[in-house]
Length: 207
Image (cartoon, rainbow, N blue to C red):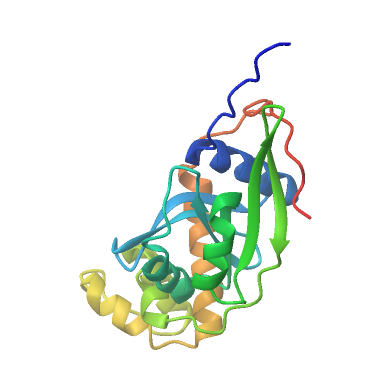
């Protein structure tokens, strides 16, 4: 008999690439942003998916722990309309105790060397968005563009903190729409072109 091969540990990059590939297949016009700063750098979203909604994905590999999941959850819920934990199976039992029912859950496994994504719970809409946190996702020129659209023109020399204060006073639905458009515009301007063969692994579709 051949000796059994050791199971390769699922690392962050394995999960990240599988998730990006699946999301690209779902909507090739969406923006996919890695390591998006939240709360002006107090937190980061592993992956933001921006189409008609703001989606946040927190990745927990087999090498990670859930120690910071509580504070990470708060950061995600301040800005994302939908939130999903993407985690190795070892984390699921404890994760269900630490994230609310509104969060989606995707379990990650490896089968014959291929990374598989299995949706275990569908994300529900988050109604706890924080205008202050949304505003602080924006750059200065993006704030001025949004305020102009809201008929609040501002001088070019206005400090960004004042612009954030003005932006966060806007209607939440309007602000969320404008943040989505700003992130998509930003990603289109600075994104590195992807090639069709950037990931040759077969990924099981979410669902």
